Length: 216
Image (cartoon, rainbow, N blue to C red; front, top):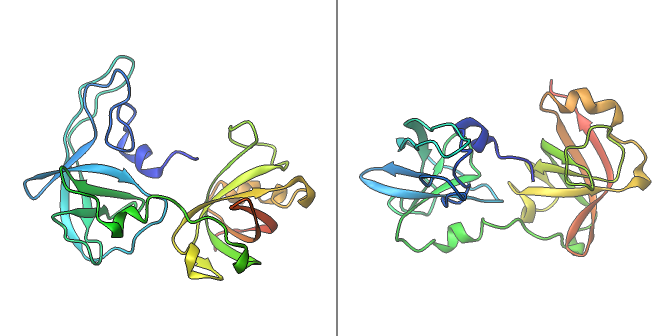
């Protein structure tokens, strides 16, 4: 999967996305809010967010070998409808990042967001549309020549069924489609929207049609 925007913005090179340190790190990623510590949880389905509650503190992290130190930072957090803020809040700038209070069981409203929904053939053809997040080739590296097969990653903002709403999905673009995004490479680099018509294969999404919609 592409590196999360949240990881890039916070520079968490020495700490994992789930609040556990990588080998050699000297601290783990936690936030402090209203006198409590919260672990970081990255989800595959973004929750709806409520009102902004204020800023949480991300304490600094001492430098691990070969990594830069992380300084104290503040990030805005918002409430998650139906979830007590004393249990969990969402990062207001990146809704795929949820902060769950330490030593508190993850509520079902949050646990159901951890994994993206599988493709259900009952919904075919499936229409998916949303911001492009990245493209990876079969070798797992960023696709540069735009020659299928490759995987397109998108955040679903519009869909033919609510099952996939707000989900981060992976869609395989097969070689049989030719070069559907070849002319859109420049647009993709500037935040284009991807529109996909997909079918299902073993629970995964396979594009039947795909196009980039340049930003207006």
